Length: 215
Ligand SMILES: Nc1ncnc2c1ncn2[C@@H]1O[C@H](COP(=O)(O)OP(=O)(O)OP(=O)(O)O)[C@@H](O)[C@H]1O
Image (cartoon, rainbow, N blue to C red; front, side):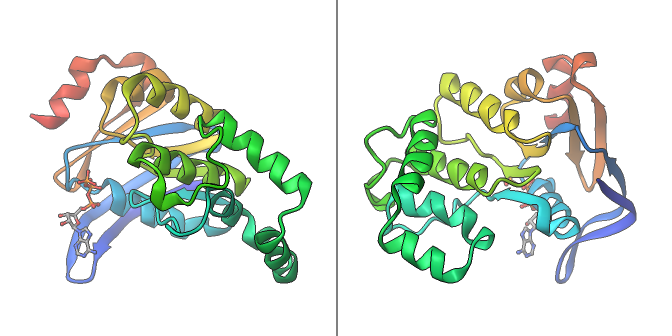
């Protein structure tokens, strides 16, 4: 599904990975861990470039349109599935079917009663749920998400991450919460100093193994 062979990844004037070899197969649910600045977002962006058409993208900055409602921001996940005139009509006069489908999704994300609230009137955690809804509504096979539940409390973070992963057969998710990674994913890739310092199935790992990445 994703493949890098001795790749050089980074930003103009700054390589983050000099020699990256990595394979991710369809069906894997991968947690990307590592200290701040270790390259998680850089790697996610490079993965996205490899499969742009099949990726549900959930960036760290939710990139929502603040003055538009929860409904409209979630709907934007599906803009490229329909004709632009249909989109225009749905954005101005949503059909009952669209309101029902997006309303159910918003309910499942804990956004009941917020469907037509503008995003600039939501809390950080609620806005993050809207970004998850937009990613889910895009109905792509592969999820790439950068800290998707970082603004949500621990209990809801687990439920939301499970829900998000349950809707995608393949996923790569950057996380800071090591315990969430072990509970929800099948494989951990740990980044440090521009290399893959750890790559193992979750079932073979403990929290103490993951601590070593941050020391
Ligand atoms: N647009 C950019 N231009 C130049 N360098 C960048 C850019 N974005 C990130 N970097 C650098 O690339 C390196 C990796 O950053 P990246 O954002 O991928 O790390 P991260 O592991 O996602 O960090 P965090 O956990 O803080 O989000 C860092 O040294 C960072 O300074």
